[in-house]
Amino acid sequence: MEPLNVLRGEVKVETKAAQERPANPGMESPAAPRPNWLRDLVTWYLSFAIPGLGLFSEAYVIFSIGQLKPFQQVMFPACFVTFEACQEEMVEHVADYIQICGIIAGMLLWGYLADVVGRKWGSRSVATIMLSGVILLTFTSYAPSPSAYFAYFMVAQTWYGFGVGGEYPLAAASAAERSATDKGLQKKRGQTVVLVFSNQGVGNVANVIVIIIAMAIFGQTGDTLARNASKSIVTLMYGIGAVVALIMAVYRWLYLEESELFTEEEAIEHHTQSTTQHHAIPKQNKATVFSVSMKKLWHRQVVASGGWFCNDFAFYGNKLQQSFFIGLLYPDANLYQRMQWTLLNAFVSLIGYYFSAYFVDKPWFGRRVLQTQGFMWMFVLFIIIYAQWENMAVPGAPLAGTRAFQALYYLSSFFNQFGPNCSTFLVAGEMFPTDVRATNHGFAAAMGKAGAIIASLWISYISDSRKVFLISAMFGLGGAVLSLLLLPDTTGLNLEEYDRMQRCLLEGRWDSYHGEAINPKHLSLFERFVLRWDRNYSPEKDRAELRNEVNSFMQHATDLKHPSVDGIHQYMRNPLVAEALPEEFMRISDVAEQAAASGIFPRGGSSMVRRSMPSADKLGRV
Image (cartoon, rainbow, N blue to C red; front, side):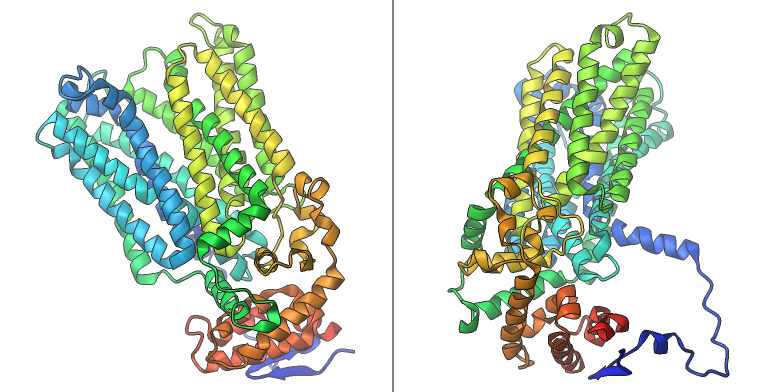
């Protein structure tokens, strides 16, 4: 029997039938506003374009460095051609790797700091670094000498890379946590994170388009390049990047708010460390928490880091062959024409991002399938190229063979994005608890960049391009095997379950956790059949444990000045609390409503409470 209504504070929940009845039976309801598809489309695009501005900027600047080398050779031939003013070893090798070293340092440091100071201040800091770095790059062309230009360029790109490194863990953690706390996005978490990451692909496409347009504007479409025009193209290219970075920095300093999930988890952590009812342990610093967590979750870091390493090795091995690929197909093409083929490859890759976003949240597909199939396709495509090399990739090969080579190469770029390049970014920010999420993501991303450095060094000493495809294929196969065995599938899993699991781990009662994080469908093969985590899975025991958590929590949360009040919404969003523990849920909603009325939740207020409320038909079932 359905209740007539439930009234708590200012929140009134009526039966479904009552909600559907018009307020005035004798009057017609006002007409619904007409949908504005253009406004909705712009709003949808900005929802992931604005959080992804850092990744757009990263790709726009980082991927352009190799494409701008021909212009640098014309601007400062004494440094980049004859090596009279600069050391050849520095130009040919160190200049490429020092930027990646800056990125690795940023990933490690900012990943850790994001778990200490929060997502907001971390994002603001890296945006400021990236802005200052791209401004330096914009004005390096005006250096007084070739050696001065090279020195400025090295410093600027390393500093910019240091900021870019921090963008990876911060963007991933922020996007995943925003999806976890927004009711409309909870079932689209993977899509949301991948769409934010797709700005990397958009940035890559944009930088090639800008170069092509700039070459046309300055009349550099022939076989030779002019020095002054080359200088203008480089300055314009980086100048547009500086404008994008400025918009990003201004937005973050004026409007960016802290991740709700991060704030809530900090509050719940404070509660568990201040009450004896909850098996409390002394407060631990982030380094200790990370260490304790890794003793249990080490294999997840192995697959996060190993998958990213294999992906970046294969990805950069592919990218390093792009000039060979275009030169084989179009040996007489000039730089302007080669840029157009580079644009086509970048566009094919961009489509892969959107395919990943579409499929990643499908229950029958998910993260593990996305990553494994992407690696396998890269393995198959590279092996075909290696096996058919004589028929496709040598001078004088049949036209059909070279066209097949072109198709296979583009497909490898597509499946890199519709596969491990997107999934590694996503899962490294999902399969760890909130308090160590950014740290783990930063470490995994850094291992990926290490793979890129090793790929560049190794391939630079291989004269036979055919072997490069074989090596890349082996790393694709290795990534597929690693993903199949060690990668958990977080599709459809509430990220807050990892936080509950983490609290049990830190309190020394791992076996007391029985929730969805150890549901067999969310575990890797290694966790199921070797570690046997699923033996503790029990929805009935989990509800009992959750009731104990809520009761302990509410003893302190009823004091509206207690810090644990900030953690209320994590319990309110938990569907088990709303459906299986309705009395506890209503108690929490009372406190949340009082806190909203008291101004303790300035960002959410009662609207946040209402978003967390279950539908009336769910309350009526109990």
